[in-house]
Image (tube, rainbow, N blue to C red; front, side, top):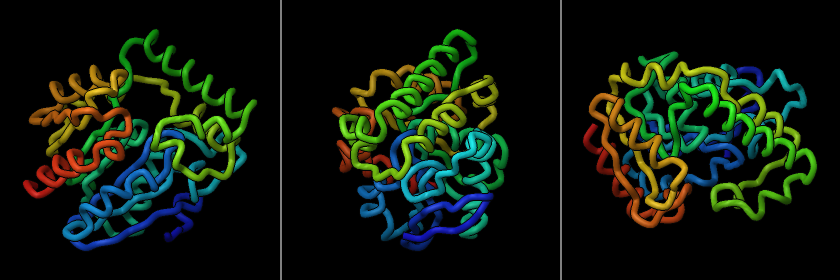
Length: 252
């Protein structure tokens, strides 16, 4: 495991393999460890880069709420790509990591070779729907404030296997990075012009609708459903997930 002081914070990452860079971004409360099945399947032909979002895993855990925001999260992606000389990269994002990857594409499209969006969505145009999402993010934060990291042991695979150092950092990340404030992504996804693969587990009910929406609205996007997979389909059904990813990457 490596780390670097970039974009004002220590970011933990791991890189292996050679070839086209593929940057994997995990979701909220998960860590780069969730992508190990993909590293094992892909780094024979691709440069696989996994990393920990700020507040997560081995990355920095500042106490200042101002250090957690969408803009800083997007900046971390760009800073890591620059640090590793990985432009243009294929961005693979799960859940919050998928939303962050979409945000980054809208900021720096020249740095993105393709997108793989896993169990995620483009945000909300409806303020009421966004408000419900933000209420969920606040509930996550309050539970972490009250009960600490132990509550994550009962969560889904990508969360329960992550090793975090600070419940406070995750609570701040919920309020500053998971919560949303506008419709900038969902309003702009029809402008995406790079090859896009949308992957969704057949049992990931909360994100099936958003995945189908993105596959319909993003020009030329391909939708693949991983049979029997839940929110962490890449861990639960790695063979099917990796086959879909490898097919997509090999066709670029």
